[in-house]
Every structure is written in structure tokens, then in C-alpha cells.
Image (cartoon, rainbow, N blue to C red; front, side, top):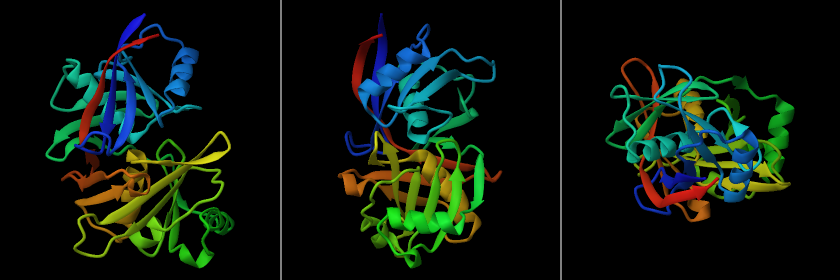
Length: 275
């Protein structure tokens, strides 16, 4: 069966400079096995499948797959899926699009910086055991003293994050065989175009993969760094330079204290997929 399909570049307004997500816009009738097999075939960091919502409070439901597993939530697939749904004629019930996913209901809205999602609550937070910090430093090829701080920042994918001395230290990281979902962050000098440099690593098929631009990690790291006074909002994070990308993530906090993560979205592929 031919189904409408989009491939969307996220956290950029320039095609092929962000992080792509594959979106199957009508996944009605597909089994989990079929979704998983197609996600494995696309070999992108995530592939999403749009379904009718199971609650009247949502505009659509989405299932999010990496090549190896299903995720309850992920950031750039949320924005890319919303972009694809809107571009295909989706009409939200209000000014805010409500996406249903494994993590619950996620709000998405239009902003001057692109589509923005409201950061979901963490499923795990708090300090990281010292033994794990030492192991993470080793995985990154660093001495333990190079890690300024570490925190669990898991909002679904499983992130643990470490703060290094600065953005230059983040850019210099050369990881070995990473075996957990790991974020590495450092501040740029004051006055720089971006306030924060972010890199994200995760294991796949026994190898270490770097994600080009990571919405979920940026959302959870923002909560940590804002809470500890290391950064102030609004700010821009840069990610992807090590992979030849130029991702830009815009973080803000609204009057109600909700944290929003925004970025550009652009369609790169439009067509149909036989599933």
C-alpha cells in the first residue's frame, strides 16, 4: 500500500544542515514489526508513524522508532512530524498542536524561531554515581577532572549528561565505545552567537553513533543548566559541527515557567512509500 511520506530536516532552515526524520503520514493498519523494519531500513536516527489519536485531547498520535527500538519521546522527530502533518493539511484543534506519543501529550506551537515543543517531564533526574562519572570520562577519552558536573537528564531516550569546561572541550571530544545515551555540553564564551555547544552519542550495533542535532537532550539539559544557574533563557545551542551540520536549537521559558525548545524545519523529500 502506498502511503504519504515526508523526510524533514529539523533544527535548521537550510536543507541538509540539521537532523533528518522520516515521517510516514498514514500508518493506519501497520504492525509494530512493519514499523520497526521500515525504521531499520531508513537507517535514520528516528522514523515516525502518524496515527489517529486515541484521545480527543490530541490532534494526532505518533510512534517513534530508531533503527533498533521504539522511543516514548524524541525532540527532532516531534518537530519534524508536526511540520509534516501541518504541511500535509493537518488542522489543529487550537493554536497549539497536541501530539500524543508514548510519553503522553506534548504541545507544539509556532514561534519566530520555528516550531517549538514544550519539554516533557523527566523520568529520571539527579546526580550521577561517581563510579559512572569515571566510566563516562573514560568513554569520552577524558580524565575524570575534565568533567565539571554530571546529571541524569532522561526524558524518555535515557540521557545522562556531562558538563565540560567549555565549548572547545566539547568539540575536542573523541569518544570510544559508548554504551549508553550520553550528552556532552559546554558553554561558549559570552557574546558568542550560541551560548551552548552540545554533542550526543549513543550505541548502535556495537558502534558509537553521534546524533546531528538532538531535541530531547537539549530540552533536558536546558532544565538542568537553568536550574543550576549556569545559563539563562532565552538562549541558542549549537550542535552538529563535528558531523558537518549547523544545527541551532532555541530554548526559552514562558510566563508560566514552561520550557520550550524550537528550531527550523524544512521538507527535503516528498512522496509515497510502499508499506
